[in-house]
Length: 72
Image 1: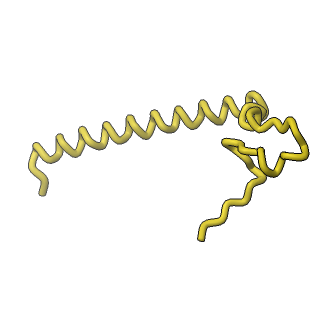
Image 2: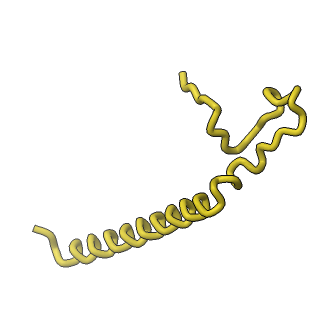
């Protein structure tokens, strides 16, 4: 059904794909571990509000779990 060259190419591509998947999985596990290790405080660290009167206007956080995102 498949020639020997196609089998080797398929094996090489699947090996590369598996290695990339493993790297992504390790990165995700490290990110989850770091987040759980500091109780998520680093995610909201840039969101400190200094002036409460301007909080709705000046609150620009890279990660805001309270913001509701709406797509049209």
